[in-house]
Length: 372
Image 1 (tube, rainbow, N blue to C red):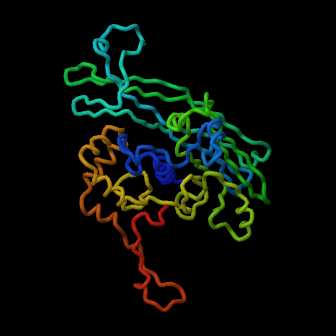
Image 2: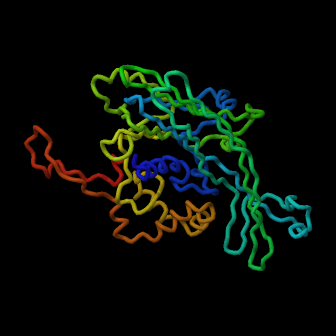
């Protein structure tokens, strides 16, 4: 498995709903993140009775010998509530018992020197890895991995130019728990159907009254699965061999779709993504850096970022390190690199059976077109 190539595509999936537009706290249209691959707590999702789901299921086909080993890695983002605390008069420097919280009140935003601090959300990466197991052992019974990420609360003091504490950044992570289950069924000689089910089993009090914004703090965001196989081969569900088309069509994928990933022609890795991709998706080489969109619409995003006002850019710079890096890199793009994002001539070839010249069938695809 080409780990670097797989990770690049997987990260594009992981962060696409995080910063694609770009989002920012004061925006009316683009304040809410998390558009893709959201698994809500089961008690809340079942009440909604709509498209909001608490589970994700991947089914795919694999050939393997008795020595074949399967690897399963589930990745998602966990939202972090970031609130800004304004010290109460006369309380910030008070002597307090060890581990006691300082006294402050929450505010939407606060200016400290040249920093504009805003209450919003951040995120951290989470991984759940199922221990590697032999493919031949799986039909005997499912393999289940439970996970639990405990709640935490961190307070970061922010000092002004005089060295006094002028604000606090309060980061809160909620408890998240769930499971990843792997099972297999033999469909033909040497052919196994793999099923991976991700479930968000986080308890939720007062689920009927819980607002979506609060529920997102207990959700799995941009959830996806990376599957690896040693001494075996996965079968493309997009273009399976003719003899396997019926079996491939019977695979039930819910909220996700698995595709072959890695170097063209390799069959030892799959990415099951909530975003529909082709087999062997790639990051276009013309992309100057990670915009977390797989280079699908680099030009649109770059131009959108460049048209932001100074106030909007200042606000984005204060959100987190990832968005700050994207903004700074985009603003420093040389003109020739920006022009490369508009389109690239991939090649010219005649269409079989048509008597036109190759130039009649030249391709001038936007960068990223058909790359994902």
